[in-house]
Length: 241
Image (cartoon, rainbow, N blue to C red; front, side, top):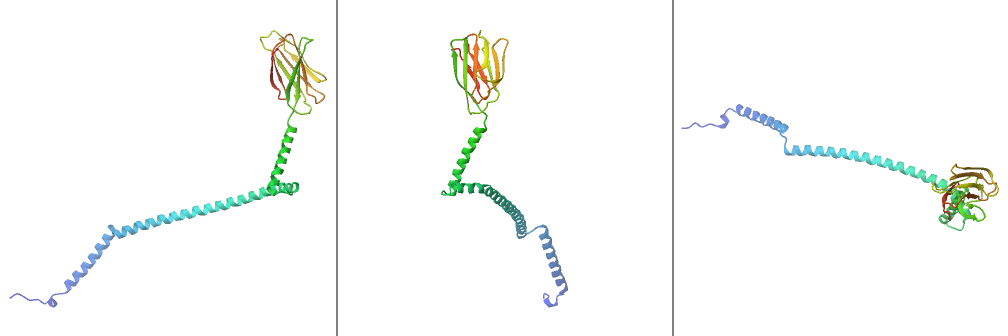
């Protein structure tokens, strides 16, 4: 007959010892495996943590940028307010003057009319301050003399001209010569010079009155010539006809 055993008669200490050792070994393996071979959940949690940290840093940067933008906006607002106050302070006298001159008109219309008046006054002041300008008014030939020509000029304003200067140049190919250059009428401090070939002549003088100058030229024969003058007269070309 086979032998019959009762489980309660088997030695239980080796069984308990083996169970304990198995549990310890299982715990050790799970810890080591979890450390060196992370689970899917652990990997996802790590990635989520890193992404959260990046988002927190980004949010912090955005908050700093927002605070800086708000600070700049406040500074600009303060500067603009100060500039508006300065402009209003400068505009106040003109608003008062416009209201005094045009009390029946709205403020903006009165200010526009005052601006037009000031602009006209400014233009008149510029005209008064500008130096006088010479312009050619015409020429007259004396038929009873040699080729004699009288040149007339006009001025832009009735004011003393000071020193007036003219220069006459004949063409190099002409046989005619410049015999004389002089101012007509009363003049002061007259200075003339004619070149040795008598193809160039210069003159400067002053007038005792505010009348425009008159210049007299005398040539040996009909000829073309060029006249230049001070006071923005520019260059004038004359033909012998």
